[in-house]
Image 1 (tube, helix red, strand yellow):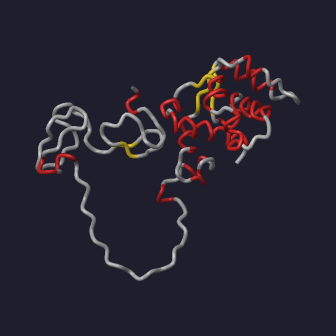
Image 2 (cartoon, rainbow, N blue to C red; image 1 turned 180 degrees about the vertical axis):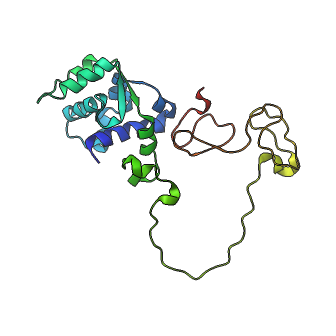
Image 3 (cartoon, one colour; image 1 turned 30 degrees about the vertical axis):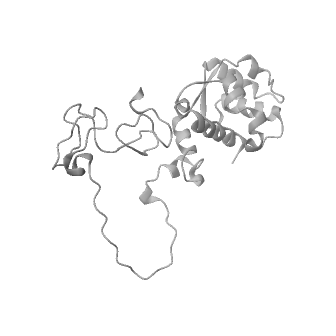
Length: 218
């Protein structure tokens, strides 16, 4: 893993632990340096020897290297990119543009939060493979055992003799049948998937528990 990948991952991890919604919001450059990933408290995780190394990696991230993030306004990003072409970049540029905003790329955030660490920074073509296409290691053969059938998962209306209520409007749901949508408010009563990381989202949730995505956009 490169210094740039490690820096991006640390931003994602720190935000996921403190305020997941900010993973999808513009982040002021000064906030990243002073509060989200300050050098003094993240030095060991970043594996950087000096504050100068820290500033240089952050400038590379702000310049768009690796496609992990985009900087606004774009002219500031271009200025960072041009400065990095110098043999000795002027790191003071980071302080002069501390009000610039950095937006993390959604797909890169999802990969960084993937519970399979080997795929965190894998090539996109590998990450996009369906689960049934992923290589499966061979396992030793064991004697066959009899498996008991697992009862099918029931919707809320099939539980407790039809006494379930809508998780959104709390209206009573009809019993004796499968209920996919509430007859009162029309909201779905079954699981959906996060549009970012495809984790399961239960009815009534406002954020994805895997990547923090705001369900419904507000």
